[in-house]
Image (cartoon, rainbow, N blue to C red; front, side):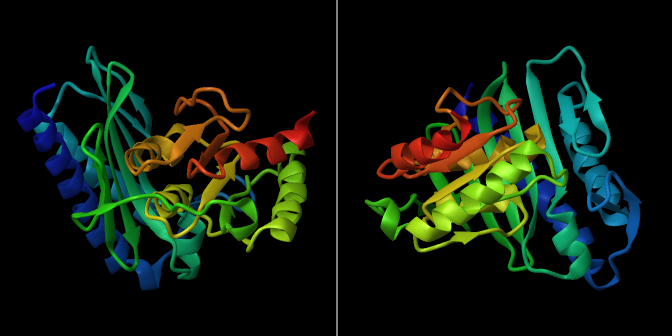
Length: 264
């Protein structure tokens, strides 16, 4: 991949995320639920409008690229490129005016990560990364934390809308890690959670039952920040895997071992 070509891809991802954020922020005070995927899994008109403009910008520049988006699903063509889009991560937060929601856009080439952009709202912080070039927030390089012990760490997790066996296990893990760390936060937007690990605001993140658009951009940014990304059990992570663990290198092993004691 030529550097200039990759830079063009990043510029389009940034343009699309900013256009999307205009729609999201302008409708924040009037957020209305359009539909329910589940009891608490909301879809708003803003989700749909955000996705529409992101796809329009990508299609106008790269009409033959594949797209995987949360609301409209797959649009696969005969292309080596795949854009993975979450037009509004943290929809429930958005509906309630709670300050943790984002736009997440990633590009993969031959199923390998190429770049990721996450625009955190409402404070409008742009996280970005191109593979091999480091991670950035608002154009400033970022690194994951160097917290050396689990007892001194701050962790983040998330919960599935479905209260299944993983939800119950994660409640146990939430209580367990709260008792042995500085605490566990639950913000409700996985892409932001992962970027907070990448920027050193927190030290580790885990979650079960995620979708590709939840993690596709964030894990690229996290890896480029120096964080370790894997499945919960330590295996190599793919965006099509449902569980993810992201942490700085010093405490990654301890988090993994503590989690896996609950699944043996």
